Structure formats: structure tokens, C-alpha cells
Image (cartoon, rainbow, N blue to C red; front, side, top):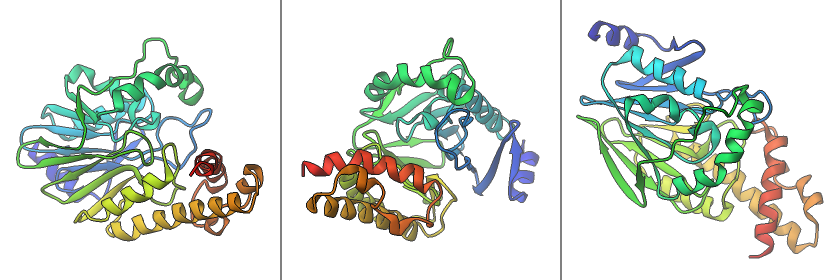
Length: 301
């Protein structure tokens, strides 16, 4: 096993578990980058970043992918690197591309960890998620399940992997109503989940005003690297957060101006945040949805 770990450390990336490729970004920390695809028919379930962290006692997995198959590929990748027990499976929030691989880890009997509102939110979305599995990734809903957390975090908690501790911080509604960040005490690497998008247009399922407040809190972390929910690992997390903050602030301000000027939502969909176009992947698709969700909320400010 020691020989295998040394070999992996010398490689910039490795292909494990069929189609999933992982990069070791720090000793004992591996990240897989998902594709920049929208969640739609046939998207495949592999669009978010997946990670695992190895301590002396065991392993923590951070997000599990958008299908049981992706979860199984992730588990196989972990097992090719280490046979230590998988102690924790952490979901950074409720969205299907991050949680539908959980079931692949049930035989390991880990502690499933998430935001204090995650179980409730999973229960509310479960029927829709499973119904759409066949369309999204070609996997029938029959026999599949949405695995909720067995340990929840209301504010801040810590997980001991042996020689390294993961600090978990739960936030009020921002990107979603179940957002949580993870900081490794040893490497000072921060996982933001979808509180941070890099390259890909930030997608709102929560509250834009709340999200902007949480970005300011994330900027207070002292980090060596930042792993976003989507996009490349950042050595300059502050700049990445500022780029996202710029987009969200522009979107909020443009919608507020449209409301003040009496322009309706349909017109605003075609105008809000257009100065950001060309700076983000999937902009036309995601920005339209963001306006449609945010406009009615800002009307009631």
C-alpha cells in the first residue's frame, strides 16, 4: 500500500474507477472535477467536484455524485488508494448531483454527515429526485434511495480522521437551504460545496441576499487551496469568491433596478446581469433561471 501511495503522489492525476479521474492536490487529499453540464436529460450524474480525505484512522468522502453508478465509481477510486475504513460521507448540500451517490457507501457503515436541515430537505425532494433518475442518468428509480444524514450540523462541528480534523460549518439559506463548508485542519484546504462556483455560472436555489452575506464569511477563512462545488481548485480563493460575489451583486442590483423601473420579469430575464455574459459557462441557461427565482423574492423586499 505504501508503494501505491508513493506512486500516486508522483502523478499529477490518475484515472480510477472507469471514467472518474482524481488528482492528489495535497498529501492524502484527492479531487475529481465534474463536467460543466446542466442537469437535464442524459447529463450523466458527473458534474460536481467529488473528494476524499485520508487520515491515520480513516477516510472522509465529500459529496458522492449524481447517481448510484457515480457513487460506486467514487468508492472504487477510494479503495484503490486506501483500505482504511470510510468513516464519514459528507454532503455539502441537498442537490442531486452531490447526494445521489450516497447509497454506494452504505455497506461501509459510515456516518453520513450534513446540514441540520438536510434530512428534511432530502425527504421533500426524494420523490422528484428518484423519478428523474432514469431521465437524468438512465438509472431506474426502483431499488434506489436517497440516503439522509445520521449526523447533522447546526452551526460548527469537527470530525477526527486521525492526524487531521475536518471542521464543518453550516450556514443559513444561501445557495440552498442546506449549505455547509468543510476545512481540513492539516492542509488548510477549504471545501465550499456550491457556495462557490468557479468557471460555471453560479446557480441559485436559495436566497441571493443570504448568499452574498455567506460569501463574506467564507472570505474570513485562511486557506491554502479552495475546492468549489464546480470548477477548478483555486489557489486564490479570495479572488474566486470575489468573482462570484460580483456576478451575484450585479444580478441582484439589475433585478432591483428593473423592479423599481416597473419592468416585468420576462423583460428582466433578457437584461439582468448581461454584463457578466462571456465570463461564465452555461450562462444563458443558468442566468435565466436565477432571474426567474430571484425576481419574485426581491419584489417583496
